[in-house]
Length: 94
Image (cartoon, rainbow, N blue to C red; front, side, top):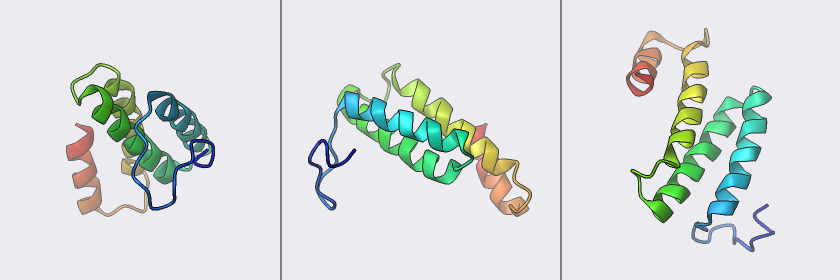
């Protein structure tokens, strides 16, 4: 997808709402495939893109926030996390 919009590997981020929506679709697929770490990174990237276009208080940010919280909730419920890691995640999720 990066090649389609001609984004250079170390170049600046492209702030484009359509691109953010497409990345969200990829992130949704990753989350559905239990690849939550990768999905969370993409959701955060989308959130940053959309925030820089519309501002952090714009309602369209909410879907990205919800998806990030979903990914963090999955992390929180994993058995291999220490209690300290779980406490940090709870702070974000709550």
